[in-house]
Image (tube, rainbow, N blue to C red; front, side, top):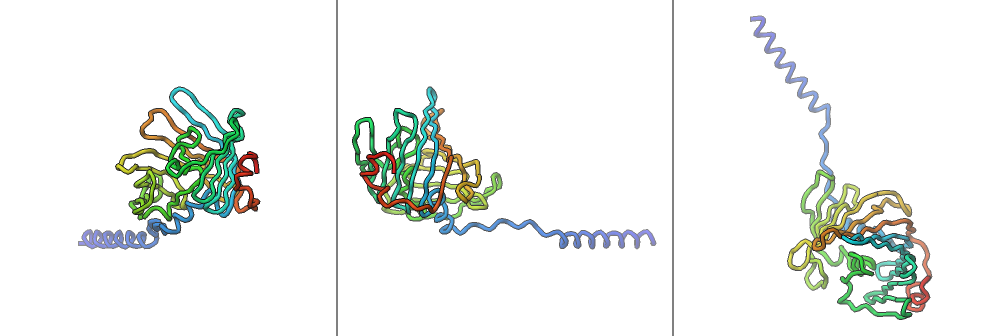
Length: 259
């Protein structure tokens, strides 16, 4: 009889301890999904802000050869940007200017400025896997795509966002699947063409403080249809919200190579 009572008291004590432990240890909370509209605004401005001056290097890796570029870029707002190649010597001074919907390339070897038609915005920029639009950022995630949270990612931790192009928007990408971290930084983008095929994958890493904000400094763009090829871009320096002379983004400055 005593043994039965002892066992009953022990079982009750065990339950009490388990319940107390459950209340004593708070459950790990699931991260809250981001505000999609605010997230896209942040991502659109991540590398440019109200104005920016940056130095980057690009490496195009192919199955047979590797090619490197060093360049400097100026941006102001969403509609003005200038990119000037600083190295190698044979391409030094080659420049791209965007003002609103207009885009020009300056080719110093023939001393000519060539206007790039809108149909070429999604063409290759200077033989890399990046497009003209990637470099001068004419398109906008917030303005051109309808976005929604797709699912949670546990490894790496973050959220997959699905972006479907809005009706009437002209462009190559019908859809972008984007993985963003819990601190709203891009980790991976998958771009799908108008036929729903995966066209390329862009990854972001080496998150560090630069120019007063945390950024992925290294971007890798891998096309799906060219085996063994990729283009990498690394930010070396960047300043945000700095004064830039108004005539920086002009054809006369473009042809002089440097602002």
